[in-house]
Image 1 (cartoon, one colour):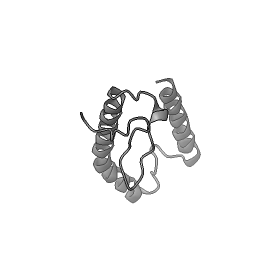
Image 2 (tube, helix red, strand yellow):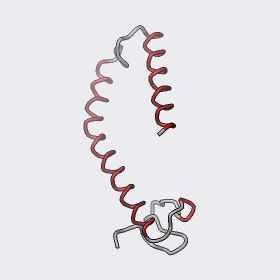
Image 3 (cartoon, one colour):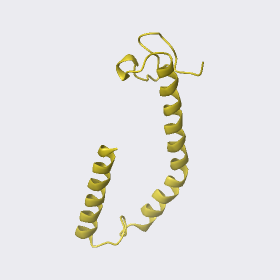
Length: 95
């Protein structure tokens, strides 16, 4: 949790500096079309991001229950296949 608070503080500081330099009140004030495009995009991407987090949490919990609790036991995700456990070969799906 500590690392997230550091990232959050750095983000706030960066936004504040960008706004100070540009003289804007919000990011992209000088480009309202791009500002609106990002707002619309975020409305679609946010639910996908939450779903991704939930699926990763579920997958990691399943692999851990199979006795492979350390991240070193897990192979990276590849475009051609799912994450598997290097120790037992489990696919990280439910039992």
